[in-house]
Length: 330
Image (tube, rainbow, N blue to C red; front, top):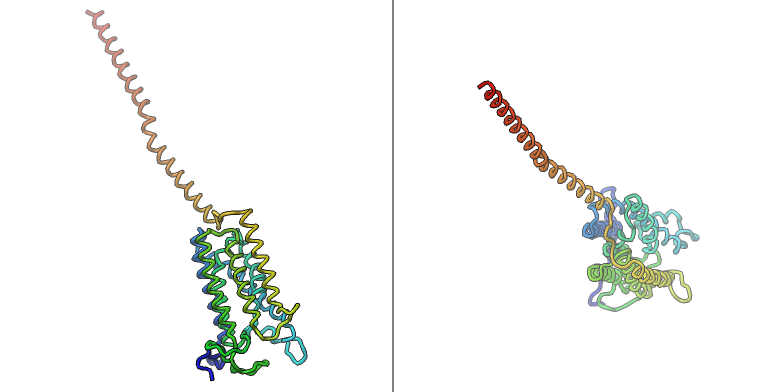
């Protein structure tokens, strides 16, 4: 008998009249809000404008959701297209099944489009959003808890996850809570990126590369603990191979970027710099005009003096003429 364990919810959806409220969807939505909120704070601290992160997220989030679902459906196609399965289930995202690899890849495409429209460098935007994405993943993993999925081998640890559902081939029992392990790991990755960014002033996409590399390390050992059906290559799950490849790519980018483009971007949003220059130019113009107005009286003073001197000289000449005339008459 287990003394303690993590309870699983009896159901992952609550109906508010005809409207279903799904725990999985709520976790994804809350995660997105946290990522955008934190990303906006970091972006403004880097010199960007308020709202830019959200504007680009309007492109990145839908692309990311589509990419995450595509990766899951392609790598687990037998769940939707094998005999006895309904292919329509491939569109039921609320039932779970979003691959982070596809979400990041296609989400980057959407972010690139949004950044191009705003004239913003994608690496700088990704750096600002990196820790927020990690925290969003940590929150999103609890959606798997609502759906009683993403668990590992059987265990008798005090924090074992109690699975009660028997649908889709599940066997009720006590299992390793891999969803919890990944959630805690992502929180650690988020704080790691924040610390490293403050300590080393990471730029040009290196904060995002650090997030990717650190996440892959954790995903590797967590994936190894899982027991759900998955494709295997040379004895390892497909996601293990994906984590290793992505880890190597992230580290390679980090090293090359640090050598070619050290330091951090001085300007992350050109519009803010342009506006600042325009304001400075306007201030200089106003200052010049005021100086000119102040100097005008000085330029008129010599001319006025000359006019006064000329008048005095004319009066002296007239007086001398009058005296000469009077002397002649006398």
